[in-house]
Image (cartoon, rainbow, N blue to C red; front, side, top):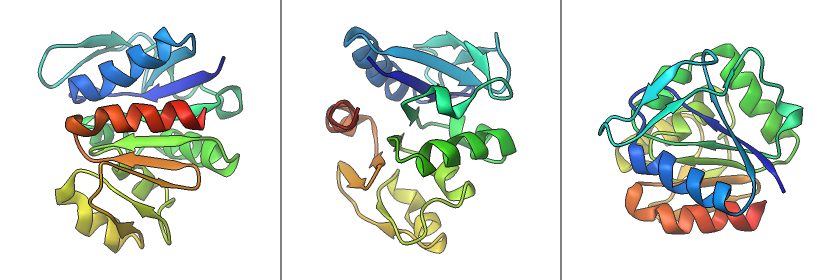
Length: 168
């Protein structure tokens, strides 16, 4: 089974973390929550989910993971400017492993410089950010461009999860 990193900070969109996390865990994959600091308590913006970071980003080694998932909400905003987060995602991407981001998750892909010339989707109000970073925005429930998997909102979670499962 695969080892999958979930990048998480406080104020994540509850279901965008819960649904993929539980689905992949149920399938037998090892899922690891990576935050800025190990042991940090992370609460969803709707207060329906709470997780503790299994590992801090400074200790995380990208080559130990088979994929990364980036839930949305305000979590990506809290992670996107961290150099270690950017480096982690770049390494996973450069290795050709799946990089999945939903809602505001592509903010991290933008900050890491990974979307120029790529087609993706995101929470629709971010489409100007995607275009300004050189990406092509597509308003679809899931967009797969090479190893990048992106979705828009919680209603797209079934397609997002299916795409991740297929990629790993």
